[in-house]
Length: 146
Image (cartoon, rainbow, N blue to C red; front, side, top):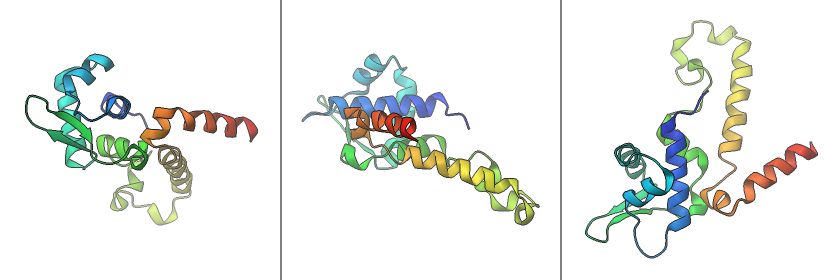
């Protein structure tokens, strides 16, 4: 599985929003400038994020975007799945009717474990964790201890 620029930029933009959100909405132009992302591309990304309920838009001269949930309630996995689709290393984990050997496939178990491991990591970190840089340090420490 390879995360595209859509997923990577979307996560960076959401983290930027979490870091800079105060009482006023943040214009996409500001996020685009800080993150060196094309404003047009960011607009496409934020359409999906708004439809999913992770952000809300505020119209007007002082308009922009705000998180629609607390940063503690938005997981990295939420963002990645909204922008990239299901986290599945092989199609048969998403489309059950795609493989005729599904019932007898021993390798499917391997791919299922890979998918679960990826999901475990993505859903172990919230935007707030990234903002505070706590989660990445904990994961590294746990990996070194195991």
